[in-house]
Picture 1 (cartoon, one colour):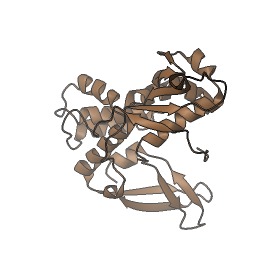
Picture 2 (cartoon, helix red, strand yellow; picture 1 turned 90 degrees about the horizontal axis):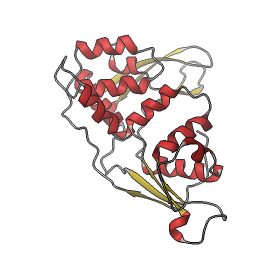
Picture 3 (cartoon, rainbow, N blue to C red; picture 1 turned 120 degrees about the vertical axis):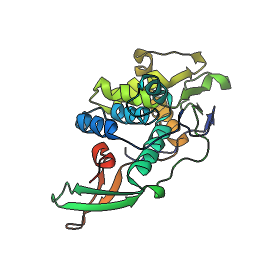
Picture 4 (cartoon, rainbow, N blue to C red; picture 1 turned 180 degrees about the vertical axis):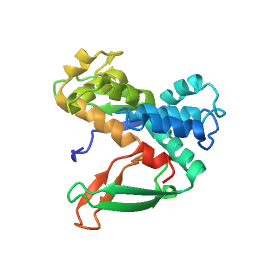
Amino acid sequence: MTPRPSAPTASARGVHKPRSESPLRAMTGYEEEAVEAHQRDSNTAALCNEIVARCSVAPGADFEAAYARVRELTTVERDAALVRIRQLSLGDVVHLEVACPTCGQKNEVDFKLSQLPLPEAPVPTEVELELPGHGLPAEPAARTALARTPTAGDQEDLLSAGLESESARRTFLLARVLVRYAGEEGPFDESFVRALPIAARAAIERAIESALPDLDLGMAVQCSSCSAGFESPFDVAAFFLPS
């Protein structure tokens, strides 16, 4: 996303420690086959959720209940679980080969998972913020919004929706996470969220992003050939399969 102005005053609520419902284990052939079977799927969140669910139960065991629990994790908690599974399975060092989008040169990149900013402080489950604008009622309670933080299930369903534009994706997600708006209690549908002022929509999104720890599994890379800088997105197969 492009840089935006700072968000209005927001406060995190309902915090809890990062957690996974079950102890995690290293990947086995079951998970290796699952990654290879789905590595080209567009919905990478579904595969990530499945890996965490599978590695929360015994190898080959039914993971349906675990999958439902993983979907309730915040995206940050789910990503932290992915990092831990990778460490248990293949160690702390990740070796990747990524192509430069400018010149096509392949770059070899090594990094340590232990250097990632894994969340240790409580992860918020809700965020309350003061709404921008002057057309709102004078009562303080009617000038605020309350949203829950997105879950791994929200991310999976968003990718499944196949929405093309950023604004459509924002509408889809805000309709799911918005709990209260300007004194009105949810749930809200997409028509309601679509009719909100764009400043309010952006402010809610910024407040959620600001409240969550910054755990990005993508990488900033500088090409060894042409020196161009680029962002390498998270590659599930490269991350989890032995090189």
